[in-house]
Image 1 (cartoon, helix red, strand yellow):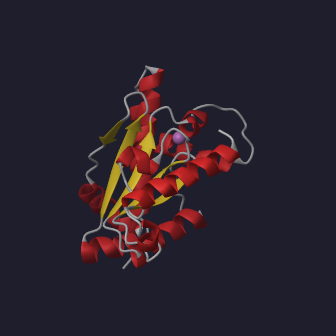
Image 2 (tube, protein in one colour):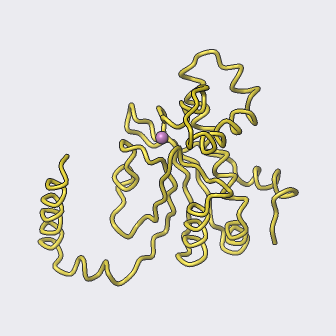
Image 3 (tube, helix red, strand yellow):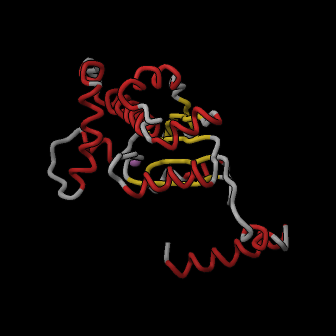
Length: 208
Ligand code: CO
């Protein structure tokens, strides 16, 4: 796709929107109140809004390699803070995807330079769940399971933040772990029991 093509596409898109509603962009410019914060992978095949059928204004989106929520990453921490404290989102979703290159790289030993510290967070997920993962002999199944467990651990990282804990207690914000299956196009809810997880980690991570 050329950049010229992109501008041509944009002109077509603006025309389409204005044909349906001449105030479409005027209304968009007035502000946003999305109900969902979506944290997903930067992978070009996993388009946040398109796979959810979300329209402009409906989802606050953060994407990075392998949908990570790293405690020291000012970008994801700021996105969570803004979405929870100022936009008052009702749901936070961490959405991973099968065949994630970031997760695959974390299962190999190649030296990837600046990517090493980022991918080390996924290696930590592997270490935490080593007993379960090591018992899976089929490499593809192991790879897919690590994608799921990574989503779970990143959801736990979301729950470690003071603002999410506060919103959970005061207004029942909910956290969801999903996986997008590139092979079928389907979105899978991992149905993670966060009530139980919060109980388990509260002793260590609770912030009042
Ligand atoms: Co990915």
